[in-house]
Image 1 (cartoon, rainbow, N blue to C red):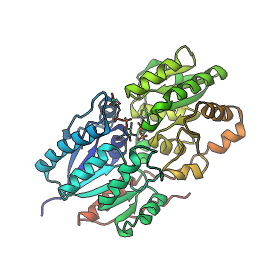
Image 2 (tube, protein in one colour):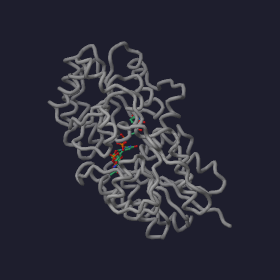
Image 3 (tube, rainbow, N blue to C red):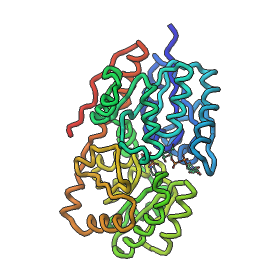
Image 4 (cartoon, helix red, strand yellow):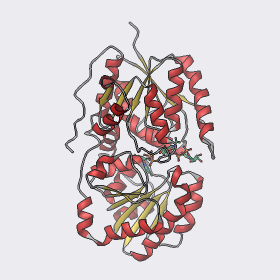
Length: 383
Ligand code: UD1
Ligand code: UDP
């Protein structure tokens, strides 16, 4: 019998991070023929991850443009992926999350009757405009996937409410915790002297990231809030690894000039970034992945969004929604920098998103779908 062929597709930094542990277990399992493809929706930020986890995609569509409207990403992904689907003829395709790459790949595979496996299925904010367009992307993938790998019990509940058959859902935990456990255990030398000095400083440290499309108009406000905080708290250091989106650069960097206690840097390799989270006292972000990583390292997160599809850490008190308004960011960060009790209430390590075995559960669930294996026990978080 021919080995089942699995095509793993990704295009952006977070997909690459969350799929790296999956690629590793599939490549090591000789029951499968595994092919890895990148749409190249991201370029430099994706290469950083591939290099770090030693993954060389078999195909790279290389679609990234400096300015990329969603329909351009979609059409170039569909065109490139269709060609490789024709060449490879996979039985199963694994896509991760909610990017345009993931949605386009799922549609391309579905149209060629490939079974779609959705990793990180069932996240819902309940608001189509936030995150945009990701909430729609993930719902579209749900409608055409054969196997739904939900990271948590509440994401499984979302899928059940939408009528997905229980037998097609497996709660795996999030593979980001597998990746985090691996990368944060490595010894790291920071490639930038400035970042190295930041981590060695005795000051308290605040790590900031922003990139969401729906926050682009608010990036100046975020920059202004950080600049005001840097003035108000000269004994606190702020660091911002700036996303390579030129709109973010253009809007945030001018706001942060002239502050000795603000370190503006390029995106960091994942292992350096995990060590930066560990070295920081507080995280201010609109990222999905960082919302999952920071709580497991005991770092409070102020989330610059109005909604979240990750309620677990919010319910546990480790993440707080603050929106992207200048005044609110200023006051919420100030509160945590001045009120130790409030800070301590948020700073406890919790692991609602995974136990480091999500990739193994993914492999087992996919082997069942392929008719060559069985599922293992599902992820059962303690909170
Ligand atoms: C994308 C995803 C988002 C995910 C984010 C992770 C969609 C619609 N959005 O958003 O869900 O949270 O990735 O970061 O799929 N750029 C570079 N080099 C890179 C990466 C990006 O120069 O390595 C610049 C390019 O100018 C590019 C721009 O960033 O046009 C925006 O990238 P894009 O993938 O369209 O959007 P993200 O905001 O990164
Ligand atoms: N990250 C990284 N280097 C950085 C900033 C973030 O490796 O300079 C990692 C981070 O640890 C997380 C992922 O990138 O795993 C999150 O990516 P992003 O915030 O771009 O996307 P999202 O998770 O919001 O989709």
